Length: 108
Image (tube, rainbow, N blue to C red; front, top):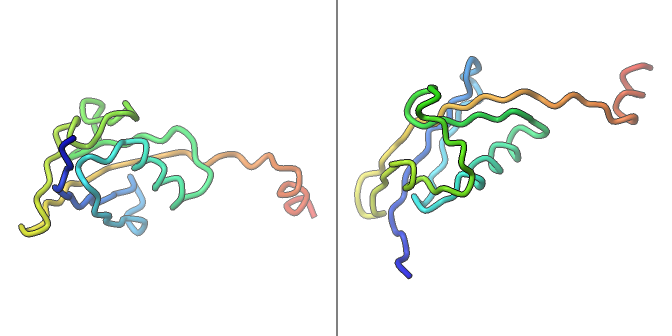
């Protein structure tokens, strides 16, 4: 099995809220579901997550969670070369909190 040694720096850009932007370096063999899981860990309970590379457009949407970044045409560089940076645009909707304990605190 060939081990991927190329790395890409993903420049995450939350649509319409730029103070939440951040960067993350990952191997190009990283699966999309792992990227989405990182976003869930960062933002908490979310739904309708849409992730696009290069530009926020339907043609660039990374909707297949079992594909890798390489499968979507994202190329990286070895650790010994200057880093490659790719913008990743994303948006989501926060989950409605219907937890009875949380709602009880709001109603007090």
